[in-house]
Image (tube, rainbow, N blue to C red; front, side, top):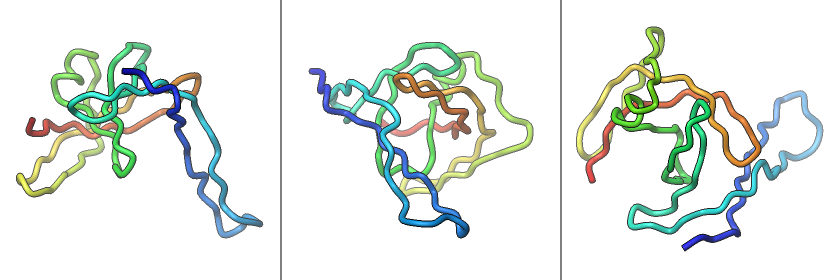
Length: 117
């Protein structure tokens, strides 16, 4: 089922030099699919279309090791992220790639980890 009400908002950070309040700015208008895993959105990673689970509370953008392999993304030699949670800890080299959501492009650092189903 497609919900055409999804709007991705990005909080524009206010620097100490800025005048006035921080404002939310719409960045992309996206169709969202409701699945058993939650909300999914179609995105392009390095120009390859893929489904991503939308987690509005996440601090990081995460890709599974299988997705990194299927998209032929190279792991960084310079940066590593460590994730800790109830299920334990995982540490992997990061991946840098272009992320396209709607008509908006981002250069992103992705954390690589496999999550339990």
